Image (cartoon, rainbow over all chains, first blue to last red; front, side, top):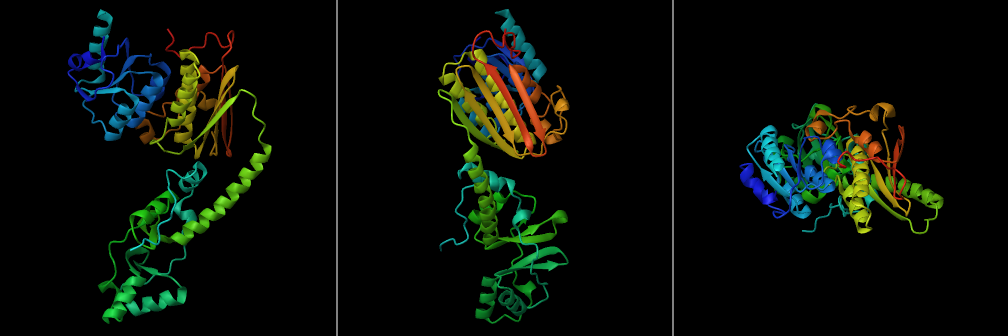
Length: 111
Length: 317
């Protein structure tokens, strides 16, 4: 699926819409950055509640395309600025990690 | 008016060794602990006499050890001009005192001199009681003494540095304790360098994981250190050297889930006890040695075929 489809799928709102035309092939859900670093697949969507700048650094290093911040956690300005610089998207949603992952999983595995 | 007390030293952009120093050194290492003070019922004239006798330009006003105000040489001059030099201090002292705390890094004091045009800052210790006073002179003297020592150390090291091998690239990055602002920069640079040199994606990922975990380990647990990349035709080596305080039990630290991280570090998604195990897992060779003087870790990833097969990052499909 395309990054741009995430907004509707997750009832989300783009904090920074980066790489909208990119293809997403997998998802990964975790709030532990070392876990993300070690195990998140490339070209994936990261589902997390860690709304801070270091998450963007990890995502960039791990080759993640877009971050979905759950439970409407507020995204600080320096995090958005870092995402712009890295060319990553950040979407926030009111859904929690479980609900977000469920919708993503269904959608990705329907393909 | 020209600001006289600004210390012309950038706490972000100075050479790394200086930036490291101003973050490492604490206010309490630099401040004067014998503080000349007065009480609020003393007269401004007694402060004037104190200033002259002790050659100082500012006197904190205390009740016991509690700071309640400050009188500067400017306040005394104004009192002389306006004829109220025999009044009690409490009628004329500044009550909104800008203070530092003794456990803050020295960089705070340097930044305060940029922000405020005061000549000195009282320092509070435990229980917010007055524990010292810091002037720009204290800072400059302390920095010079430390720099002198650092330069001596550097000169000794320069003599020992081995010649660079032909075709080997070396790059070094500094890390600082709790500097989350710049955390990940070394690994991001290392990833970029490896990509530019067309190292294959899987290998880049493994090297990036090792670099990131070793870097974060320094930011979270050490007093600061360096991450070095060495790239030859045969291998990528990521080396991490910090200045302490060392890992109590290296075998424990290499077990998944073992962590000494504090609550607030964990709340940021760090400190899950996966860092060092991750770094070791992605490396073909991993060595670590730790003492109270510092921790030294080295992760090597082979570039030539036939080495390191079957070692994935967990994401390898």
